[in-house]
Image (tube, rainbow, N blue to C red; front, side, top):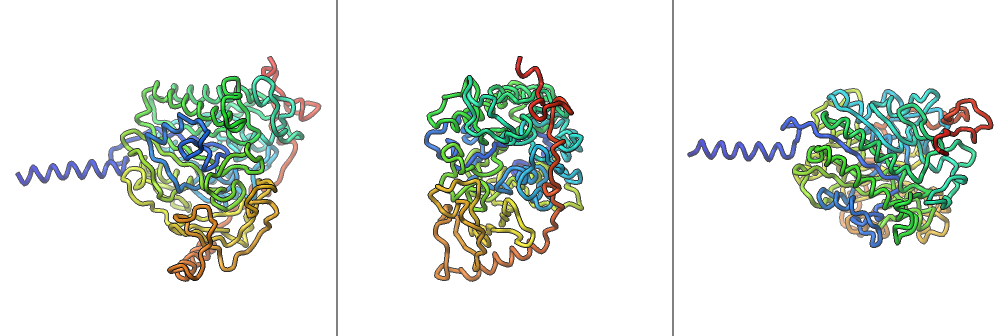
Length: 511
């Protein structure tokens, strides 16, 4: 009888342990990362927006784990994407200041190791669809296929970095609300390293992306795969095809969001039809907060302060949804986590050892995801979108406490926004002592703590020490964005054509 009890307890313990550590079972799941663009903390229906309609993303949230304290590593596009791919702050990889342009000389350095490159060592097939924004290069050497991806289809940067004054954004001929970069080439869609469409057709790109993702899933369903889907939505200028133009009571932003949600639903259906959905780990998030400069068409930070371009919560706290049937228990968590944590989490699941000579800034989220446990992350560091090396981190969060050492508004917020701290007129300010907030009680960063708060002095001392220690150990990579630009590097379907850049067009687009 004692032996039976022993074996019973052993079996129970094994399955509990295995539930918290998928690698124990020898599982090699598929991985799908959905990455939205400029989607705010308050934009999704499942995060409280009263008029957004996002049934497919809501379904992921209902069946999965919804994070309420999830952070992107940066308040703008390129650096946040570098951190997602490498598990390292953008300062280490040199993806600062700001973002890459179509004619940027630099890109994500090849000595950085991406999620795709790690998974290739474990026999995974790897594919990417959508916005890359980590450089193109003189010979396309920075595109995804040179960073571990077997297949790539998408626009390799933001579509506002292309002109759209002569193409529609809404069906059938609705103009774009913003004209984009009219001096640049039209947006190209690459397949691997070849331009297959230029200008990109914004009215059909949602279907183009879905078709590419579906094809990849069907072809690779017999082998473990990693699929990274980085949407152009909901970055300005918003756009939508026939099915989604005027589909939302929320206006153009809502139309674009509806189209994004449809994309998610179609890819989920493809996983189900391929019979691999039950063995697929999915994570949905956004690269940064909403672009408040565009008013109601820029997105919504919800209860959070400010938006894109700032180190206030609205700039970097974003939606985070994890989904894996029978492995991740449905619910909501207030544990702190970040896009930086996806790479180490994936490596842990597949039992891949990170490179010994590489400093990772992420933590395995396994205890949160698989065991309803606590986060291994106690601290999160915030860098300015154009970080001066001498400043180091601009803010940090320690447990529920956030300290601002520097504050500044952003040109990505309009000058009429109600909160003056967010406006471009709020110039850089060194905060001495640091502004301290309790984000559990005050996520909107309205009521700064003072000496009357219990343990104020000890908390202040701790955050100052944390900043000092982190700044001292940070090894800054050479800035790839400061390498500059070269007009001849703009991707063109007809190299050396004239008159440039208007001649850069594929004839198939207009047929």
